[in-house]
Length: 513
Image 1 (cartoon, helix red, strand yellow):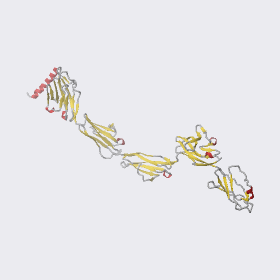
Image 2 (cartoon, one colour):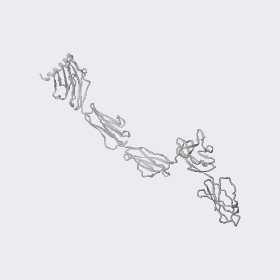
Image 3 (cartoon, one colour):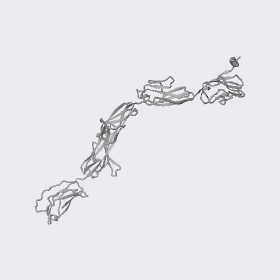
Image 4 (cartoon, one colour):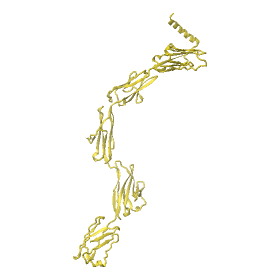
């Protein structure tokens, strides 16, 4: 009888003996498989048994029907596993090292306790090659929106159990122009759209390793959404920067035209150093994509506006005893604002503070503050009227106009106060005995008008000053020349010029020569 025949007849009897002896097969000795391991790695077959009070009589492990280790009082290891396995005699667990693909089979353990029935368990081991070298391969041709198509192929080395596609961090599923090969190795996009550009990932994996490849897909499109950023109106004299932007891949090339004429500006920025009337008009930005050969244009109409401000006279001259008006006007800007309050104040002599004189508020009306000018100030719309001007009223007056929603604007006017020059002309008849006689005469213009009273000596000098001219001093304003009637005394000497000048104490000095 051959050995094979003996084994064939023995196996059924072994099964019968196991069943008759009550051997428990499986019964949770090993965890549910299969187990996974990597080539050159390590795996441990861990039983669910606790160490018994008395050692097991025997522990044996079989690999694909081959007994790789048997342990009773001694351990007997198959030469092919020497140095690769370790047995935990207390629990029956087995560690297998330096795994090879050939180790992917069924493993069986049989344990005979000191008392009780033998126990047996089975599990499978699958050994994988680690994934490596994952890449996404794509044609190098330039892709143009709605014209081109492409394939993305995921390649990797090792044992590949699955491939998963991801776009911009989200799973990529078949939809529209996106489809996959049966093995999920290739993703096809036909044709490409703007929405197809982005970051694509292919994740290759097996139970013992995972690797991800990344590819950025570029789709040329545009230019779209062309826009000129910058003001459509600005104050005269301001510096203006216009910037042209567009959604475009590859980047768009820009050019500018002004009122239909070439400007020879070929970048996204157009700068006006100082805005004037000659710069107002239509600015056209054109963007062109050298790949898609598409171009687009947009126009900005630039205008000059007067900046919102308060306009006052820098200096106003008034005269003692007269009324004076200090003008103040709000110049509106491009956006109309509402005046909510007008205030006039006088700056103090030190220039560090100011005294409020009069306020107009749209809700509360006019309020005149306590000041030396209280009885002499009034409004003429936004302007200030000062009545019966006094010398001490000279100073800097501040007009403040509050608006909504633009805020408060101010302007300052310097008020100069002057006295009114009154030349009092006198006919002076003086007899003289000597032609070389000369006199100095002072007229007080601040006192009441009166006739000149000559001394007795002066009366004896019978001279008529018949032609009198009023001549200003170097520091005075020009005065009108007056022609008096001619002398009726033929033989008298005529002193023809009178010089009138202002004295430090507001006197007028007349010098007769």
